[in-house]
Image (tube, rainbow, N blue to C red):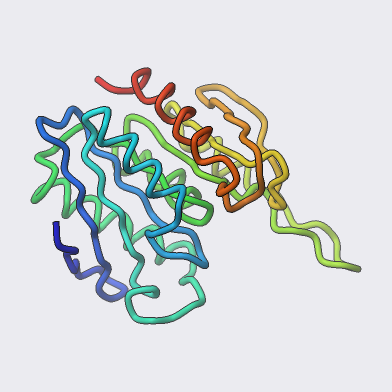
Length: 204
């Protein structure tokens, strides 16, 4: 289907729908900070979800649609994401049970908004646990509070050598370690298998 432009309080966002026949649920995912919705791991997740009868919408944040490289502040990212999810939920996804997710920055957005959106689960691809430490600088705080706040069953697919760290397993959280780094490009078959194994456990 053709992309859809959706107005948000912070400018137009773009949604890319991939609708399954007789869908059982919907998965809405947001991209990472430096790449768009064409990243290999997002494409892999889309393929696996469609095979499982889950419709997918990939969301482009307004800053990316406007041609800017630097991400907007977290609060703006969250508002844009919730606006898009609510729009496609009403007009494209027929109020299907909702899974939210994304890669890296998008995974953080999904975790922060899952409760507000009433999501039944969260899919995190390469969750950025902690920014890489700069020489001579103290380490920055980790972001595990965001991951813990998802509050619903969560799958984290993480590269074993991810430069942003590897989160622990936790209540309602499954960790799938795959070969490679933050890009998750090294073994996309393993990424697919992790998602394929987890999805049935959260589908209605």
